[in-house]
View 1 (cartoon, rainbow, N blue to C red):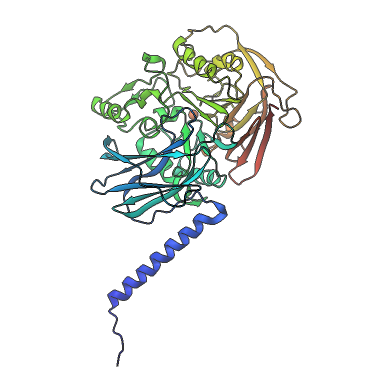
View 2 (view 1 turned 180 degrees about the vertical axis):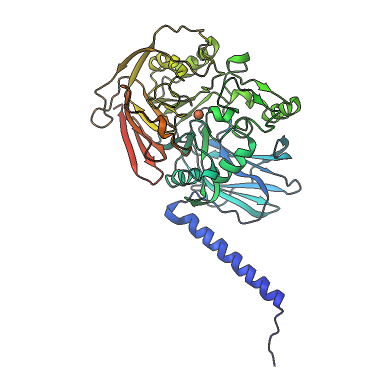
Length: 501
Ligand SMILES: [Fe+2]
């Protein structure tokens, strides 16, 4: 007599709810697989144009209490956003941090809101959780780790030439990087292909490197949990050829690098042609870009930062840069000169000074800086551009007849000179290099060029690998530096050590 009559519509709704619950549960499960605690789950439907991602912001120097910038883009204006932080050791969520939203107009995204929250007052090296609330309800959550202090070890991944998602090589590399749980990810240029467009950021880097799940076919939630610090490669600044204009007539959404990466702002100011890519084409699109990029263009092309006991100098090596220009050289010398107390000095740029790979054999203009890097006691230089992994012997190099002021902002420019190679150093038993070690780290997703593989390695080359896509994992622990080249399948491809004890 109390038989329950359940309408079909209600049954269907219950079924949908069960499906949703199962999906959320499986999502949480997969997030915690492999102790990958950095993964996050969005559990309220919010239309992000770009999901939250972490950045260092304009904080080149270590701070007694660290901060992390959290950025996201959305079209939703009316909602009340809050961000809360719970740092390792906190009993509960802290009171909401302030969130600032500005209207930005970016090609392919249109007019929308760009939000920013500063997660601050975090002890160096501490892990933290954050959550975004919309109108009081959870909308997004993530984990992170503050920059290491001067006495703390850290782990970084260095990767370059990330490729395109459509070709399917990007996803397994992103997955591998996520599985290695770096404290910081450094991209040696060619972040997106082919032209550094906003549309390419949306399709590739934001889709794959900030995917909800860790999956070799999809990507990994890296950007939301890890600070990423890039340099611009040739594909990031529109076209490979320096003669090619950054043509806003043809592509209205160029130079996404300067729109999305929130980096230290102490790079060289605009110096005419010496350090700024020329913009051409539709003036309205150019003005739209310049307004959205603000001071980031072109300042964030070069910058530096400290992490742990290391100083990292990040340079734009594109062909419009004239690294014979005395003001640019002075900026570099001043930057490295001020970091002589750091235990380690690392330099990052896209175009390799030394590589056996045949693809960009004559693009040697960055060799001009070799004497400065040696004099300033740089330990390792990380580059990309050639789609391979290559490790040099410790090098001391003196260009033959190039003097300061020589304009080298051309693409193909051989720089002959004399080499002094440390043949003793092996990175295993002999771990005190006499000279600078140069890595080519361009094997992180872009397609390989079998025809460019060298039949014979140059004398300065120790290891060359194009067997599979790979990234460099470094561990800096006091006076010991260890680098491991890790394949997308997890295999170890190379390993070397530098010991300053
Ligand atoms: Fe490149």
